[in-house]
Length: 113
Length: 114
Image 1 (cartoon, one colour):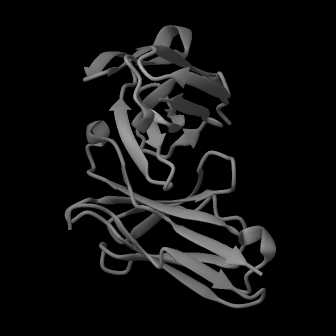
Image 2 (cartoon, rainbow over the protein chains, first blue to last red):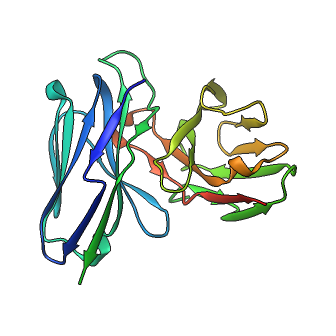
């Protein structure tokens, strides 16, 4: 099956710093999503981004599908950004699909005040 | 409702006991997924429903696991004769048929088998 690798595995920041999280995947994808899992375990969908660039406040994401990677940018980090960030993909190249996701191992982000 | 609701939030089961985990998706969401998340790992796919039809159950780890969604809304994941390795967080997610909207996950049920 498709392989999803996230880096770095752990990241410690001081409040206000910027960071870049990376997701590499081994095959073409129909669907790529970034999630944030907060310390209470809730998974929040950040971006649906199989290609291109999107921005939402201090967060932005870019997926270069042809090179099989995606980046999540966090600017001016806050303590509430702490948690685990997951990249998840659905393999495919434009065929029928329904959203079955394969998750990476995640990046654990800790933001200190 | 406004979000995906799962119950119970926590469940402790004795080994060999049967358990039932409930998922109430967002109203109108056609697609429903169950995932299993072991400690320190990313979620892993268990099964998928489109309305009441279970279209993919390839991720169910054994025949002790069974899921249903009889009326295309609420879904139940049942685990028979629980084993210690079943201890995990079980997550439910729903989405509109148009996946451009992405997933909405519930808060999960943390199952501990003792």
